[in-house]
Length: 305
Image: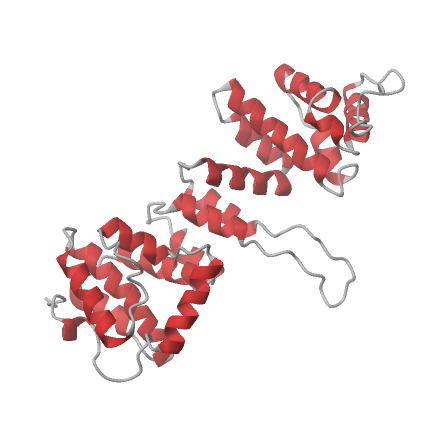
């Protein structure tokens, strides 16, 4: 069995290396784009390696020091090997497509496939290669580790769609397909309010009906109402509020409570400040057969001075 506690057994001592000045600068650029925290930082912290910025190591001396820190931690051998696997992916990147150092380590040490999937996925996340990351992180055999952080990063870095060369139509709405694909595949139970809010915002801007059913999944009436009002707000704020998205909202089969929340939100709540509130409220009255004349002036005129 590979004795990974020996530096030379875990890392090559010759050939191209990833942690020169240029390599470190590139990694720090990625870290900056993620508000100062990479996924490997989270992994190292979970292992107990949290002294300063352990990653990226600076040169050979830095890598040797990091190797020793990891070996000294009180975690399983597989957890330690998983970090070495991640670091060797850095080596493979600078050495080209034929380099297979990370996979060789996994085979020689018996690193389980789940650890390989997780660390390769997190490595791609840290390189902003999100599509490749999800090919690993959304694998059905992998528990949803770091799910809140993955959702948060994917939503915040969702790219705005651009027009195809053959059309002049451009959508200003970010493409949330990746975070939603991860959520639907991994089915994680989110633990933080931030991740929940970002996920719901992505749902509300992608599928009004799906966002409604998501809100109904919360047993607390207060949480249900809060999410429902956020859904209505997301529709009212959208440029297409009086079009497709508005029609989708007003056509929903709302419960009696949801109907009351909707009417209160657009008539006397925060929704009344939206310039689209009046049109959407009228559309709902028509759909439900309650339209008997002009909409009350309190609805949808925007804030009055």
